[in-house]
Length: 269
Image (cartoon, rainbow, N blue to C red):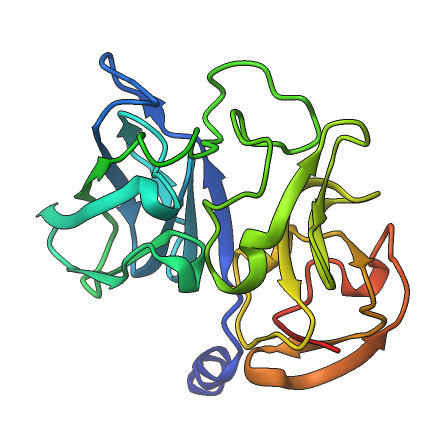
């Protein structure tokens, strides 16, 4: 029995990921001048919670799989200049609830909260995110709540020119091509797409730009890649900070194959 316990302790931890769309509140308003998300989650041991636009991701690090316990939001979490006065408040739960990262340009406007509850058995935890929304700067924040038509190409509603909502690196050089129904990059760069055949939402970077961390959860979404301008090579890595197995991609990839959902960092050349 002791040997069996030691083997389990030495085994690598494999995170379990659950993505949800929170409930809308009665006063839900995508263009309201302030918003909030009340996140309720059942936690057994340790969980990372990521809130980005209209989605919440529960990444179970240890213990039984985390599950939603009635999360709700009054609007999608805004991006770019639309987001101001962000606040975090832990409300209930016996464990440690900490804000690890505020949403900002470095993390594509994603809030990251970690809950650790080492006591035996799971329990519900509750925290709240508040913010102010500035809709006078430019169109919609592109929330992913199912609040209307989605054109299937991953185009956030109301954004038709350069997407200034993504100010992390050169990603704000991307724009949506209505004719081809896909995101493109204005200049020399590359875009990673959430779906095959260059469809869905996109993360873009310019020539000479390095990205040391795509985010363990959200990198799993990228399934295809496309070059723009004079860029002819992207070096991709299986681990953060340009470590682990790597490969040099030198052409458009409608299906990233073995690299689909595996790219954790990259360099654009």
